Amino acid sequence: MRQLRGAILAVDRVTTTVVTWAACAALALAAGMAFGQVIMRYVVRQPLAWSEPVVQMAVIWMVYLGAAATFRMGALVAIDLLLNMLRGRWQRGLQWCITAATLVLLFHMGWYGWEMAERAQFNVNPTLGISMSWGFAAIPVGAVFAIIAVIAHALDPPPRQIDTGT
Image (tube, rainbow, N blue to C red; front, top):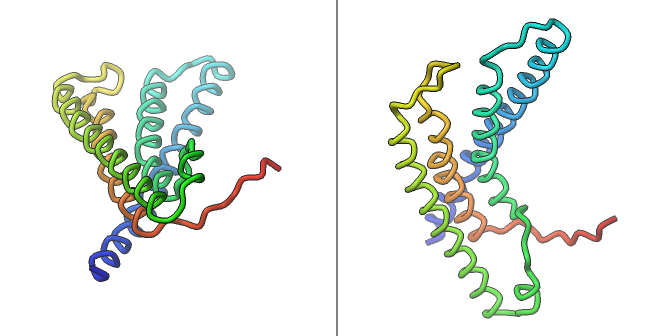
């Protein structure tokens, strides 16, 4: 069991690092393209038709890949009043219920995201000339990486930091 835990955490270290860098690259691409779009439209007065869908697709990929890093760090917004009130096995039980519910959601998201990508494979973005499946593919890909991150978070949660609001 200890070897399985170690293997899952090793896979998570690699995958979460890769998707975090990929999400950062997608954010940088979106920001750079949006800046370039503004310059081309308002300074040069020659707007680029293809920059808008590239920005949209980069933001979609950033969100779905970045979800894995967010799940791994436990950085999602949480209403944890009940979790903080419980102690011992009750608290651990609730944490495992939350993990199970999150995994069900992610499996659902991955399954239907895959179906959406399949259905959109023949829809072509008129500006870029590529299949719309490339945008929808972010959903199942992000779900797979998020599932790994959720399992790793459950096996090895990061230390809790109390936000004092200051």
